[in-house]
Amino acid sequence: MSDSDKAGDLLQQIPPAAGKGLPPVHLWNPPFCGDIDMRIARDGSWFYMGTPIGRKPMVRLFSTILRRDGDAYFLVTPVEKVGIRVDDAPFVAVEVEVEGEGEAQQLRFRTNVEDQVSAGAEHPLRVELDAQTGEPAPYVHVRANLEALIHRNVFYQLVELAVPRELEGQVWLGVWSGGEFFPIAPQPE
Image (cartoon, rainbow, N blue to C red; front, side, top):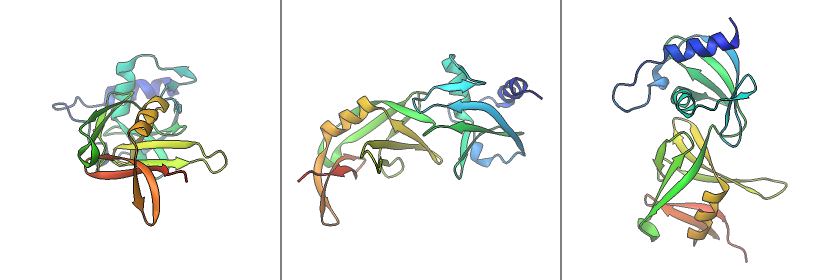
């Protein structure tokens, strides 16, 4: 079966969503059927056999059946599981809405596939620093072991909201959301 046939079959196997929720991919344990030539680039673009998938509704549909097991990513239906490649995180946080301020502040992110999450204990923020360049790579947890890379423009908005707080004897700049403090970077001395 060709990759093209696999992708078409996969779309037909996605059960219609009952209501507005996401399919329960965490409950599905179908047999692994191999890898297909599908890739999610660092900027959130989806590619199939090297060609961008330009139809947003199709990308959204595929995103609802995405699952991460360990370091591997899969598209999962009730009857089959296929591996795909993800360059960094499968989603990109492209917008943030800010409500309130200080410890009562709430940050609500929207991703490139229209997921919406409010940062907090269930959807933490984290920032990794590149060991060589020191460049930050910020992420927000979206769902079940899946994260969104926070777009550079959105990260700049977070930096503008950053406040200092002492953590373990060191002063950090970070943001509040959902009653949680998320450190972004050590405060320069």
